[in-house]
Amino acid sequence: MKEETIKKFKEFGIDPNLAIEKLKEVPISIQCWQLDDIDGFLNAETLTGGIQSTGNYPYKSRNFEELTSDFKEAIKYIPGKKRVNLHAIYESDDVVDRSEISAKNFKRWIDFAKENNLGIDFNPTCFASSMLKDSLSLSSYDEEVRKYWVKHCVNSIKTSEGIAKELNKKVLMNIWVPDGLKESPSDRTSLRKNLKKSLDEIIFCGYDKNLVDISVESKVFGIGVESFTVGSFEFYLNYAKENNLVPLLDMGHFHPTENVSDKISSLLLFFPKIALHVSRGVRWDSDHVLKLNDEVQEVTDELVKNDALNRTYLAMDFFDGSINRVDALIIGARNLIKSLLRSLLTPRSLLSEAQKEGDHTKILYLQEKIKELPWEEVYEEYLKEENIKNDFYEDIKKYEKEVMSKRGK
Ligand code: RNT
Ligand code: ZN
Image (cartoon, rainbow, N blue to C red; front, side):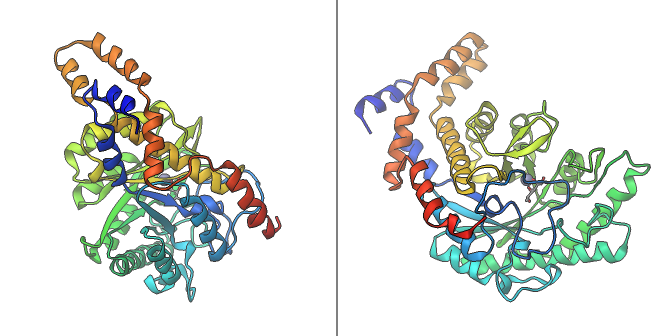
């Protein structure tokens, strides 16, 4: 890095090299489902559960080989520690019904993770299934349906434990269910009681906390289930607190004027660990590719200010089928990384001192002044240290032509 650059940051008491060292240690969980519009490998059922990947950009991956090829291509351009975020529908070996899964059915993924020095995170897939009844899974009134999903989640925990043992790395297993209703329910409580009972049954089976952390993800509404979501924020926040689980906040799962960044400091006061799905909501829709925008910046700022990077599971969650899906992953991941870097390059103590002194003019002055600092040069240095090229657009074009386009449509 140029002396000049270092000097500019030092004037504000920041060491850019230290920022790079810290950034290198922050793992980012990369969602495999961006690469195939959440089709999974069971190629059985269409995507349901109030989520949709729109757009028909060609050449999406159709199987394990294609998906891992695209994943590898994407991570060539993503610096730092990485994890692959899997869903149960990406079962790769000796495929069984998803309620029966174990780590054996993810053998090739485990090998893939070992070869590429990746961690794995796991998700039971409680959607895209004919076993959903009236858009309900774990909260269903139908005991056969409810028990099916309980079993799927229990076996997802066992699968996660198996994966963690194999990799010698902890797995975050995240439960999100699509359960909800299109119109306002006459009885909210019974559905929430069903969900609570199912979760109790799932965690009652026990799990090794050294191997797995379990998170629960809330949502405000989904497509087709606009009026009521069983697993609301209050529901899961309380459930997580009572049962030592990790609350997971998806940035696209709140009312558009509600900011996840504002919730982080409160959660960190009460939970040892939190989890985030870093995503971008647009109007009613969540899950757009991350941009380097103010809200992502505010979220990473909160994590850095609270010295909570090592207490936070950072996963991306978006799926865009209208652009090259490999580019989408790289662009999103890089924006999260840039945001983290900018947060690490912010003079926290100067800002918090100014607040304590009540000098709000200084806060605004500093907040805007530091935007003049050459963070891009620190970013380029980081890429250089990680042996990663900055430009990737032409390379992915070439990959699209030489590899992806051979898939036909
Ligand atoms: C859906 C949730 C959930 C999913 C993935 C596929 O609204 O955000 O995280 O996106 O599990
Ligand atoms: Zn999510």
